[in-house]
Amino acid sequence: MTTKPFVGAVVLLAAAVATAAPARSQSIADQVDAVRDGQVRMSFAAKPGVCGDGRNINMRSHRSTADWESWCEPGPVRVAIDVSAGEIVDLDTYVGGRWRDRANVTDLGMVPAPEAAAYFLDLATTAPSHVSKHAIMPAVAADSAEVWPGLLRIAKADDRPRETRKAAVFWLSQAAGEAAAAGLEEIVLDEDEDFSVRKSAVFAVSQLPDDEGVPILVRVARTHQDPRILKQAIFWLGQSGDPRAIVLFEELLTP
Image (tube, rainbow, N blue to C red; front, side):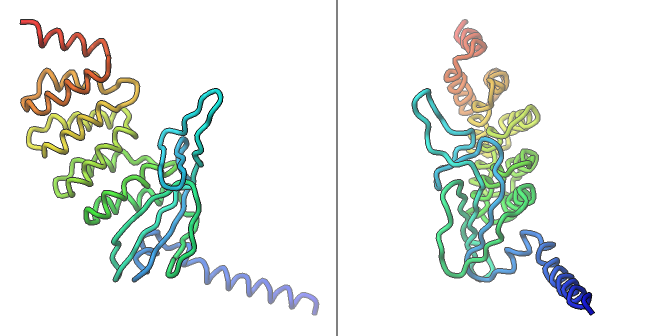
C-alpha cells in the first residue's frame, strides 16, 4: 500500500518528461518560426573576450590601466528577434544589461551557443538584407563555434545583399586565421567582384592580427590591376608602419 503514491509520482513525472521532450528537441529555427507576431528572445554563452555595457559590444575584452577599468560585462549574448506576420523584421544583439518586461515575448532562455551560431549564419545566408546584415554579429560572438567558413561563403556569394557581404568580410577580419586570410585575399584579387566588397576585404586584411595582412597587402599592391584597390592597399600599408611596407614604397617610388 505504501508504494502506490511513489509509483503514481513516478508515472506523473515520466508523463511530464515525455510532454516536455518535444519542446526541448525543437530547433531554434522551429521555435522562432512558430511565432507569428511578437518578439523572440534567446541567450547563449559568449566566447572569451566578448563583453558589453548593454548596447555597445566589445569583441576583444575590455580596456584597463593600472588605476582604471572600464565597465564591460562578460556575456551572455542576448538576441531579440521581432516577428510580424510570421516574418522576421528586425534583430538586435546585446551583451550586458538585462531584459526589460514587455508584452508578447517568447523567451527561449539559454540555448546552446554553437546551435545559435549556426542559426544566425543561416539567417545571414537566406534572410533579406535588413535582417541578414545584423545576424552575423551574434554568430561571431557565440562561444565554441567556428564561424569563419560560413562567413567566407557569405562574403563570396554573389546572390547575397552587398551590405550583408560587407558585414561578413568585416567580421572575417576579427575571426580570421590563416585560412580566412587566404579567402580574403581571393576576394580582393577577384577582378569581377563588386568594388565595395573588395574594398571592405582590403580593410579586413589590414585588420588581421599580428600583421598577418601585410604580406597580402604587399602582393595586392604589386599585382592588382584596379588602381582603386591599389590605392586602398597602399593606404593601409602606410597605416601599418611595417618595414615591409617601406620596402614596397621604395620600390614604387624608385625609377
